[in-house]
Image (cartoon, rainbow, N blue to C red; front, top):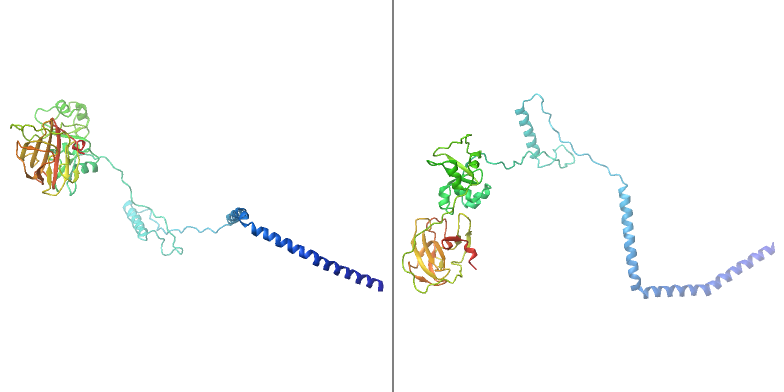
Length: 387
């Protein structure tokens, strides 16, 4: 008994000595190692930063992926769409009553601005029936009339009816004479197709009319809007025919022919300048072979090039007060709708000289300068010659 107690006492003493020895020798070494390791890590922090950054990014991606997979496996409760109460329509009702009742129902739903009826607890948005129908464009079945409104032009009217501007002109003699002069309230004829409108005169035949408009007689006879009866397709004086695709020759307005003497030494340079400062209100097209330059009344009008005055005065063909300069090189320039004329016929003028003032005389709807360039009598687009 005493021997076992003694051995137990010795073993306890030995363990205490071993623990004391480790604490005295091993613990300082462990502390030194830990301190050295921490010092090395903190001393080389910048070298470790890229590795830590990449590692944290990968960990974040993996974390988000686990969350997404977990959410995808969850069954979310679905809510049924609200059912709109629809009153039953009587099967025995006539068509008129059924249509009226359906219209009343749709009007009631649309009046709620897309919301479910007040009895719906969730107030969800309900899909409503659209009662509007898009009507496609259909060809006109015949000739119609159009009343000119403020701001209308031949080109704008033609675009509205999907026609060429010349079709509007050739169907209305008053417009053909003055295409840039439209009056509010004026009625114009609108053809269903592009072409011309011809009034049959005494002695006219389909062949003669077709030759005038440069088309084949069969095109006139086959036009469904002319209502000509086969096989002879008779026509009578006073009948109005639509000439599909027909064209009328353009006849420029001739004011007068100068018979006076030509000043000596007058010669145009062929280099034109703008006759007045302003914005172009109407460009060059088939029915308006000039440009209109908008400017206040009284603005100075300059000679676009040197030459002599071959006409200066009033006209009865729509120009109002007009000045014509002959540049003695085949060119002539026209300055129309003037309010004042400062030159006389036969006078020599220089390049850029003041010759008149902007106005709104003749067939004009507002103050502007109507400017033409003619080469041996043929009208050209002035924009091709202006800087």
